Structure formats: structure tokens, C-alpha cells
Length: 285
Image 1: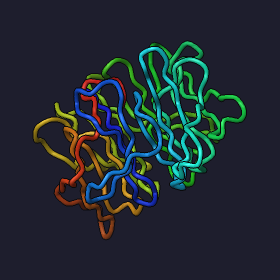
Image 2: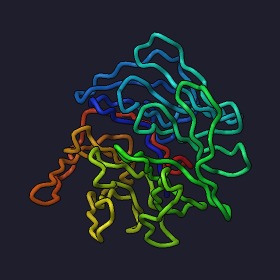
Image 3: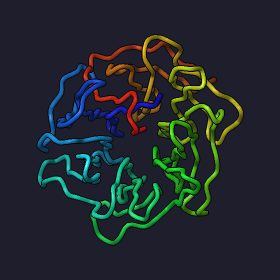
């Protein structure tokens, strides 16, 4: 079982999400919401939106649309001074994430016949550059950019199985970070703001749970969630690294994190924010 959660947290603490239910299809709105659950839709018309991501500087939003005929990546200025701008024009393009410098967007594309990762300037200038080339029926899904570096995490997936790999743009090399077994899925990787930890989801115990490992890996692994109905999916860090957010059945939870004198975490607390779209059996991770 895999899952998609359509929400993101900016470096300034703003949450953006797509309201919906686990069964939702069709037209959605994109909204900004505070911790008390007060939501305000942004200035784009309802559409088949997915995977919204706020830029590191909090000024822009990147997201995808997929109407079943074409999958497109768009960029929108959160100031509302301009309309949403189409970023991709070739093939089907999905799962956009921001680079650490706010200037580039990484996304998956089938424009050259596979599910590799491409990089495009966020202002639309220049052509998209291929970054990864999957082999043997695999597909690559970008997940998270490591702050202040040239590295990012992506999922290398075949069918319902996969693991998390770290790619270095500087060295143009990929290195496996975590894959538990051929029968499980590790996905939704999220770097902490200081780049020293990686949160992710894994179904190695049978249900999807949230884990954290140090980065680079030391052999330590912390299971943040345990059991309950449904799956725990799509971890994201707060801007100060003191909280880890995740979704379960359309509800948003927060876990308090402490890193000194050692790594510890609290029990999950549910926040008064509901209706965030998640596709428990969907393809998006």
C-alpha cells in the first residue's frame, strides 16, 4: 500500500494543502491554513491538482495537474500578482520539488520514454535537463532537497516496491540510503532543516509508519509512529526542525522532536486541520 498526501510546510511555517477525502477525484482547491485550522484558498481556479510544494523562500508554489490526458507542472507566485505559469510542455511531468536555491524545480518526466528525473529553471527559461536515467523498468520520484547542498533524495520504485536513494548533482552519482526488502516500500523522504536527519515512511511492519534516520546513515533508526487504523504517511519537518508532521486518513498530526542531548520524540498530537487529500492506493508518493 502506498499513499499520497497533498500538503507542504514552508520555511516560515505556512501549511498549504489540497482539501479532499481518501476517495476524492476531479477538481480540488489549494489552500493555505494556520495551526488553528483557518484556511484560505489561493488565487487559482479549482483543478486536478496534486503535490503542492512551497519554495524555500516562501514566495512561490509549485504543483502538478493531471486530467488523465496530460500531466503538467505549474509555478504560482503566492503574492497573487500573476496567474499560474505552466513550466513543462513535453510528456507527462509529475512530483515537483524545489531546489535549495529557489531557482530550479525537479520533477519526474516520461518525455524520453522512462520515468527519470529532470531539472528546470523555475522561471521557465532554458530547457529541462535530465538528471537521472532509471533502468530495468524502474521509475524515479524526487522527494526532498538536502538544505545547503547539491544532494536530493528520490524514490527508486518498481510497482509497489521501492527504496530511497540520495543523488549528488556535484558528483553525478546515486547511492542507496534505505531499502528494507524487495517486498516493502520506503518513500516520502524528507530532510530535516539542518540536513542531519531523513524522515520517511515504510510499510516494513505491514502498515505504513514514519521513521527517522541520521544522515549520513549511522545504523540508527527511530520508529516515530506505531499502529492504529489506516496508514501514517508523508512526513514533513517544521522550519525549526522541532516538529515532524504527518498524515493519517486525512488528519494532520504533529510529533515534537528533540535532538539534544539525544534524539527523542513525543506522542503524536492531532491538529485541527482536516480534509487533506490522500490517495491511499494511489501512485503518487
